[in-house]
Structure formats: C-alpha cells, structure tokens
Length: 369
Image 1 (cartoon, rainbow, N blue to C red):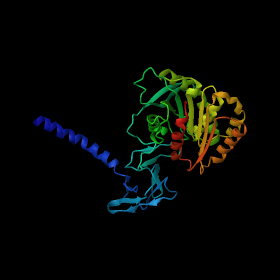
Image 2: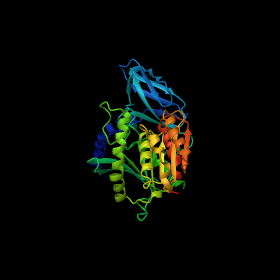
Image 3: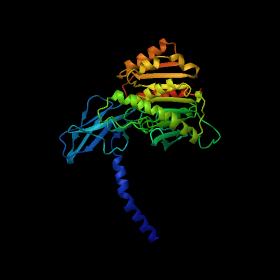
Image 4: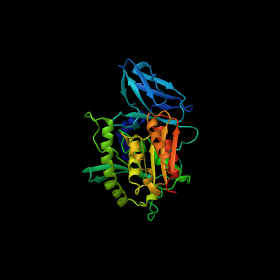
C-alpha cells in the first residue's frame, strides 16, 4: 500500500506541470453564456495592447491590470468561428493561451475562437457517428517528392469493407495547407452531420496540398505564380494523386461518383481542372474562386464541350468579396452559353471561412445523386 501511494505521488509530481500548462493554455479566450468573450494577455512591458478579430474592422483596446496583465470583455458576438490576433505595441501576435490556429505561410497565423449558439451549428461535432481524418503521404513522380494529403473516410468505412464510396477532392486557398479544411473549415464534422441526417451520401473527402511551388518570395508576381502553380498542380493531381487514392481507398471511379471543389486559389484550381478534364468529374465547384489572368475567358470559351458528364457546376461568392466581379463575369458567360446544371449563389460575407463552411454544407447534399 505504501509503495502504491509513493508511486501515485511520484506520478503526480511528473504530470502536474504538464496539466498546469494545459490548463493555462485553455484559460482564454473565455466565452460566457451570453456570448460575450473575455481576452487576457500578459505583457508587462507593453504600452498598448488590442485585439483584432473577424467580428470587427477595428481593433478593441485591452485594459491594463495590476501585474502587467491586459484584459477586455467584448460582445456579445454572433455564433461563429472567428480568427483573431493581438496587437502589442503594433506587433501582431497570436494568442499564447490558445493553441487552436489558422495557419498560413503567406498571411501569417491567426488564433481561432468558437462562439457557440443555442443550437449546434452545421460545422460542430454532434452526437452522431464520426468519420476518421487521416494524414497520409504519397509520392509524386511529377514533383519528385512526397506530398501530404488529408483523407476523410465516412463513419461506416471500416465496418463495411465491401462498400466503395464516391470521392470529393476538396482544395484549400492561397497560403493555406492541406489541414485547412479540417482545422478551420470543419469539413469532417459537416460531412458527419449531413450523413447522419440522411442529407448527404457517405463519401471519401481528399484534401491535398495544392501548392506545388515554393512561396513567391523572389519577386514573382502573384498572378504568374498562380498560373505556374496551377499547371504543375494539375499534372501531379491527375497523374499521381488520383491514381494513389484509387489504389489505397475503396473508391468509385465513374465520373458521376467523383467531384472537385475548392476555395479561393483552390476554387480556381477546381474550376480549371474540372472543366478542362470533363471525363474525370461530374461535379465541379468554386467557392470565391480566384481565376488567374484570363481564366474566366478560357473556362467559358467552349462550355458545350463539357458534355453530359457534368451534373453540377457550382459558383458562389460573398457579396463583399473582392472576387465577386470576376466570378460573376464567369457565371454570366457560362449562362449565356446555355450551360446546364449551373448553380450561382451570392451570399453575405467577405473572403472568409464562415462563407466557405456555409457553401460546403449547402453543396454536399447535392453530390452523387
């Protein structure tokens, strides 16, 4: 008994520092029942501290407390997932108490805040069966290196081993990574909930790294970088990724059982690949799609060549998004050409994840029927 007690005390001494650190990381931001949110930051030497989030275009100052703490409570905020960061004497930093990040190699990282509503949102984990998200690596012969990819498999994938599933290839935006659609977009929870409700078919979702070139840090114009990246990504996507997925997962390979969608840069990639290689995809979607150069003109040049394979072409963008004019121009050209199965939606919002989560939840029920 004495030995058991001694071992218990030793374990406590080992794990207490780790538990204390975990508790500290989880202290702030603190979301209250009325949806007000308290932020706190320790910055004894700072002259000014403020917080800037997607809920406002202007930063909110924090008030200095005894001991060098800075604190503020704001809101109430509408239910949503928000990106935010602190400004400490003008320097932008993530929240050191919050390990949930929106990562970007171009725009920098932001901290994330979830303000829940009275009812669970479409992107929240709910009390239904959940699929698995697996991080994998495949070898790209085109690039001569291994590439990361995240794979969502539906809840019954490992139970029904004789069943094959349709596939959605879901692409991220400029400066983001393959983890963006699960970490911030919550694509896995959106799919879980829709499948459980019977509104979407069980499907595999493939989320690859859509950036095949190094970051444009050597003066290469963004539009030129986008075009070159699109050409290279398109080749390795078709030659390496799709065959690897089909070899390692129980997929359906008919055109009507394969979809491609993406946001921003990934939306442009999805439209370019899906509309050019019409024997690969029956469903194509661009959320706030960035179309480099003359992308809209080239995509709309021969719409009838898409043929009967195309079951859905989805274009959507926020009404305050700077890409609205170019996306609307593409839609108008495709509509004027008499393209069938064309969906166009302009919603509230800017170029932001809140809009893209909405579009994904609206689009998934339309796939593979």
